[in-house]
Length: 186
Image 1 (cartoon, rainbow, N blue to C red):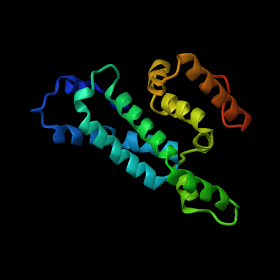
Image 2: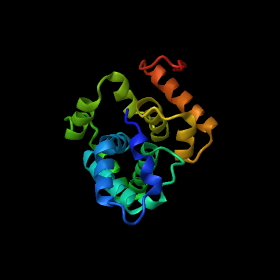
Image 3: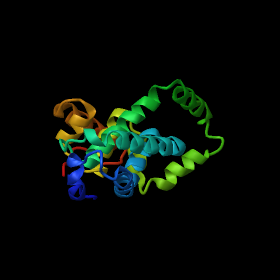
């Protein structure tokens, strides 16, 4: 897990700072996390590429707004989530999802399905990727990125109780599918 200690200076950067070098550092440190989160939320390789690129462009343009109220990782994942939500709202996204839904006739496995299956390390993550969006995002932020309930709540703009509820329901759905232990906490 990447530590943010090397990026404490972000809150003190000025216009004279080498922002391009900083962007490169951020991309090296968090690029994989941003892309994986975008992919897990969209389940589309090309959209994850586009979103990750947009996240770092937005971060670059807004470096001066980072105030260490959250970790750099949380800040970048929040930007990623917002970008994913923007993509989901676009008409293009809705058309692609609709077309994909009609293709799922079982006749042949799509390249996308094969990528999802090859990236899913085990059956549990395959099942997490099949959860409804609002449950999938809390499970990924909690289990994979190990964000606290408070950090997730702030990122999603909901209460901690809502995060706990979504996590509970996600675990329940996974347990019903045989993919989890249900109510176990770490």
